[in-house]
Image 1 (cartoon, rainbow, N blue to C red):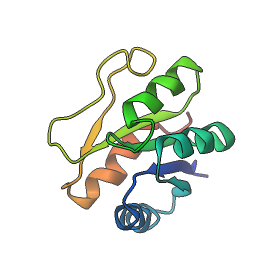
Image 2 (cartoon, rainbow, N blue to C red):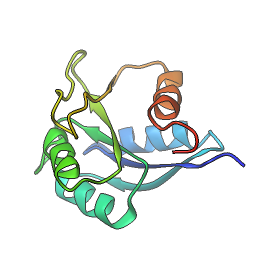
Image 3 (cartoon, rainbow, N blue to C red):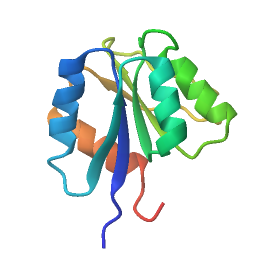
Image 4 (tube, rainbow, N blue to C red):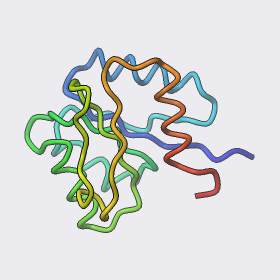
Length: 126
């Protein structure tokens, strides 16, 4: 049986969240367990739900994506982070989350990137 990858989507644009949800949920082994529109909401849902992956907009209102990522790292949570950015080369820097660099998904990406990055970032059996 294939492990389901549980994902939280955090972005302040509802249309983008909906598009990502539809894209990801086409895949039988990916489940979007929650959405958030602010950094504070994202952190609260991450703490409550413990998803495998949190896709965080770098420019979230309130706590930014990098601030949420640092808090996840500080608390030692096993949640993997994917940074979502409107800027082509923006990314979280090493040390932001448990000393690891964090992959970045540019907003203008081929659809296959999202599923591929999630599967790469959450190895089967983890």
